[in-house]
Structure formats: C-alpha cells, structure tokens
Image: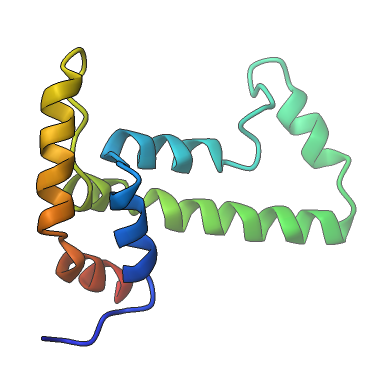
Length: 113
C-alpha cells in the first residue's frame, strides 16, 4: 500500500462527516477574497484602490490561493460523492460507498499537481 499523503487524513475525516462534492465546491466559492463585494457597483474596485501596498500583496496572495483551490473543483467531483437532490436516502447510500472505499489514491494525484 502506498504511503498516504498529508491531506488524506483530512479527506477521510470529511468523508466521515458526509461531505459531498457540492459542499466542497461551495467552500471553494466562499473562499474567494472579494466574494462579498460587488464588481457591478464598483465596490470591489474601490476596496482594491484603497489598499496599502502591503494589503495589496496580501490580496494578491489570497487570490493566488483561491485560484489554486478553484483548480480542485474538477477533482472534487472525483473525490467526493455527488449529492442527489431531493433523495437524501440515495445521497446517504452514495456517501457510505465513498466512506467504505475512499478515493485517496486520487487525492495523492491531485496533491502532486
């Protein structure tokens, strides 16, 4: 059996809590640093323009991190079970299948990207 990567413990814990691909993707979406500010009304631009050089560097780092997380969206659908809307019993069954046979080999591939 290959050695587990450092993220596999967290992955297995998320499966144990019944995590789904949709929930993972929602977490990625909410991690967007400027998500609460509207681009349409100019509040994002005003916020960015008001940042100090240090604040701008921190925002750039946060945006880079969010881009890295966003690249995992495709992997989320391979790593986590899909929620079956309106049929919680079926969703529970799929979650249990993933808990019984975790796809942590795919997690290792994603961590090496």
